[in-house]
Structures are given as structure tokens and as C-alpha cells.
Length: 189
Image (tube, rainbow, N blue to C red):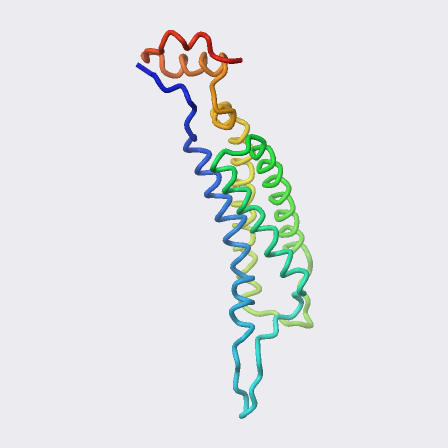
């Protein structure tokens, strides 16, 4: 007999949040981590010390933006996993949609622009195209899955903290052999 009618955190929600953490937080923070870790390296060239590594084309504002967006999404992901406050589900859903579309747009733009021949071409430039296409596909899949799953009824019930009468009918259809308590019919709408 089912006695606990408080909705649990669906596994799909946990999966969506973990995927978002990897794709939208950890991967974008890796280049920033590289820049910060290599900025204090001292290189000896012909007896003279040269401090730092010069990463051409990256401004401090771009680095700051690259840090703020993933960290904000990480905080939203943690609040979404906890399930409180109730409105965080919609905020996280919209944030993932906006950032996902933005990243996909930037990556598609980077694939379609012509390479700068003044800076030269190397094997890393040629190899990065395939990796970028793979990352675009992963971004599309994770964005679509997260936005879709956060709109499903088990997730809505989890964030509400209780089942509605419609949810109970769905549960009864999913588990026809389960015995539900008598007070289940007086569930809030």
C-alpha cells in the first residue's frame, strides 16, 4: 500500500541537472581555469624572464562574462536540485534555454566564419571544427532534454510538494496494481 504521497525528486530531474552542470558549467570554465593557471608562469628565454602567457584576443570583460554565466547557472542548478523556491524550476528552464541557444549560435558563427590567415593555420584549428560540431550536438540535446523534462508532471509535482487529483489519476494509470489509501481521493487540486 502506498502511504507516502509526497512527491520524490524524479531521476530525470537529477540527470538533467547533472548534464547541465557538465555542459554549461564545467566545460565553459575549463578555458578560464587554463588562462588563470598559466597567467603566473614565468618563462626563461635567453636568460630573461618573461612573465605569463599571452592569450591573444581575450579581454578581461570576456573572461569575467565567461566566469559569471557558468557560476550563475551552477547556483541555479543547485537551487533547482533542492527544489526550493518553487519558481526556480521556471527560472532554470528559461536560463538553460537562453544560454543554450546563445552558445549554439556563437559556436555555429565560429564555424561559419572564415579563418584569419594572418594568425596562421595549424592542425589544432583543423581539428577543432569536429569537436565544435560535436559540442553543438551535445548542447542541443542537453538543452532540449532539460527544457522538456522540467515541464513534465512529476517535476511539477516535486516542486509543488504535493500531488493534484490529475497527478493521482496518472499514478493510478501507471501503477494499476498498487493500493492507494482512502484519503487519496481528497487530494488538493
